Image (cartoon, rainbow, N blue to C red):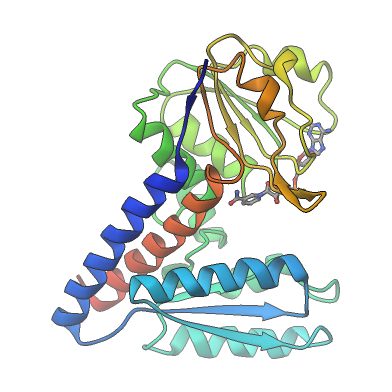
Length: 283
Ligand code: NAD
């Protein structure tokens, strides 16, 4: 039977540490850390994520401001906003909530965010820092996964690591982090042939595809560590990309959904905000 990797518990511990750190920093610098979230349009999932982030910030003593823009907003207008937030000394972190409407170029807008306030780690500078093995601000979801592996003393060095999903926000940065930790990394995607047999080579299997319960026990080597990033809502319930009931019979370690990777993503966002703050105040 598998060990359940309790991301919720670990995230609580880390969020409490952030809260303590924020109190010390405010006492020292008399400035409250502030995260600004730019939310464009009315995507329901984004509304939920943003309100979760706001709540977490508030609990940690971080000021959170959500700037809402109309679906039809022009690219120039968003660029101007980002530029003013970059210059605003009271703002320490800037997050552009994805997805954004089609008339806007996400790469252009992301690149406009100051790398020093890039709490998501998506700007070209931070992507390059990670790719060159000198990470500073790292995307929150893969970073949270590395903290889970560390907490449960699941070593990466020399291990076969298979990632299913090659998105900019999860799959690719996850590959970089595992590579930087000396794992042997394979990235799979929708065009990969014989996916179950490739997945079955993994000592560490990370699944981030957005297809509920696609990965069952036939994808998993006996004793492997299985990290489920997926979040989908089916029949009113949150489910992952891994069929937990089947996978748990084979895996050595496994993250549940909910309560696995998701809470760690939020904890890492708070930590990245504090890292930005510390750098900006000269700590
Ligand atoms: P995405 O849609 O950007 O990318 C999905 C990737 O999966 C693509 O690279 C695609 O090639 C691959 N893929 C799709 N179908 C496949 C298949 N049948 N076989 C193999 N590969 C396939 O998705 P994303 O933004 O990386 O998100 C993936 C999932 O993770 C979603 O459910 C999302 O909600 C969730 N997510 C969770 C968190 C969290 O904090 N837990 C954070 C980000 C994303």
